[in-house]
Amino acid sequence: MRVLFHACCGPCFVAVGPALAAEGHEVVGFFYNPNVMPWKEHEARVGAFEQACAAGRLAAVVDATYEPERWLRGALDAEFRCEYCYRDRLCRTARRAAEEGFDAFTSSILVSPYQKHDLARRVAGEAADQEGVEFMYRDLRPQWRESRRRTFELGLYRQRYCGCVFSERDRYRGAPKVPSPDQAGDGDVEPPQPGTDG
Ligand code: SF4
Image (tube, rainbow, N blue to C red; front, side, top):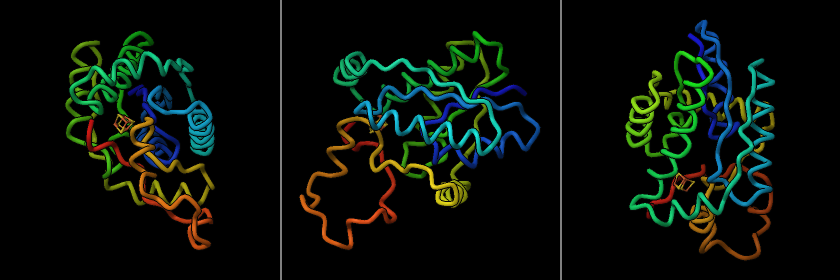
């Protein structure tokens, strides 16, 4: 099958994209994440995505649409922010897959045990119905450790928070203003997590 594989970031995509291709599918990586703020953080994640695709010899497509104003308006109006966020990204992926004749789409959101897996699965299924293209569901969480191993091996940029300004606040609120010496290095950090208030 020809699969458009939405990548939420390089570290989540780096193992699962090539693994799906190794099954014989034609995989194209697709980056569309306007939830990531600010702009420099977004660009750092685009860079890691492109590096992950190159390492896996996969085609990389970046939707450069970046409209934080629109995204924030939608997020603030939404009853559940993370549901809005998943829907925005997965509907765009499904639409692009349908327009460009892919057989199916999927997303690396399904890799992280820290994301809202069942919610993402449901929203992706609804996006598939809406756009008339197959959603290739896999529980990718068992590949989380391999994703992290490859991320360290390749030295990919690792984000410190899920993406939106709210998740950035929640990640750092309460953290010491001046890191102690043992916190100052680029050591292992807690993985990015979706907000709990969205
Ligand atoms: S916490 Fe993550 S999934 Fe939830 S709205 Fe923010 S960026 Fe999106």
